[in-house]
Image (cartoon, rainbow, N blue to C red; front, side, top):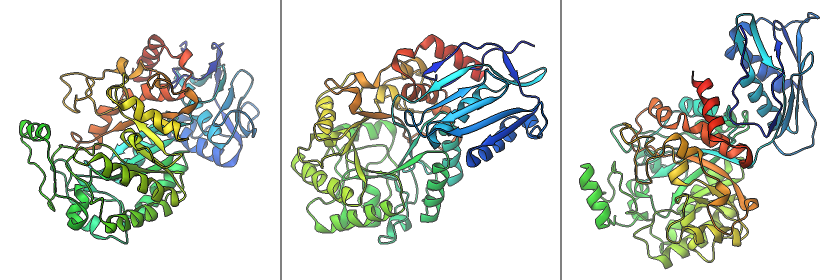
Length: 482
């Protein structure tokens, strides 16, 4: 049987044409101990017949894993052209990503396992390559979150953004405000029972992600999307405000409008706000952000800032200016959704997350550019390209379509550095693919929405724009999913 060249997603920065195959009748793994142990275990899982192949025979193919300590961050060189396989990681992350490529190259044929004889010289385009899970509208267990970490890290994503609070639920234990989970975590945006992550759950998950070179980015959405806070502590949150548009949408969906202090399972947005002029609110915010920062080793702390439709602009500006500084005082870099870029005095260095369309509407471009003017950078999550909860087809049973229908090619065909005029590529921190969960009721639903578009976003985030090609991607994906 003649084996064809294995498909790779994301496409490496540079790769030679394949020149034959290297048979792997027996293998021996040497070099960096942690990476070697992990690869040894994964070969046992991903290629069961390799589990017993490792030995000291002279005919064994040696896989050598090394750290070279220089080169582009997260980069690596993988060479399978000789008698053995050599993988040189520029750093520990690069060594890990090189093993992801090696696992994708692995092929099974009639005569056993083999890899193409290739030279791969690779490093990512963007340093931030993220996925987001909305735990507030549907809660996922630790095991389910870890399954998504495995899925994403195999595609070289390196950040997991967890949306831990919203109108429909609060999902993280906070010792100083215990009613947040006792009352605010019950229920979701459907008929499921809700839930929350204990601090032990969260720390375990952070460690699990770190072992796969993923950084957890926790988000507490403020000052809007805070109805669940009011279920736990009504005195912290204003009475709900529902616009005529929200009321009409709720009626069309057969959903109730929010009631102060009661669980809200609807999908309306923009109706909630903490009490911006109450000092108790800032005591709450400080306590929550400090507790989350204490158990989060990563550099980012996301504080929301989106869809505050009933909040006066002056109040919103006062809140964002103050809370970005509270977040920074924890030692973390604040991250907000792009609307917070309307605030002149947003804390310098704050990162903005752009969720507008690939052709910016209204003030979205100016709001996003303001983060860069204030010494920050941008994470690009164009909703009509990167939102995994948008329907991939009109008749798809899951997802929404407010940003448009997003089939696979639409998800693939965009350049994150060309969305916001006047912002150079150097100011783009990276790309993130969010998955909001109003229509999600299970992990199977999550995967149905995420795949295969998640692979498109992996390539957008990793591969050089000049090498990205829809025809090539489509062919490689067809081999992966065959």
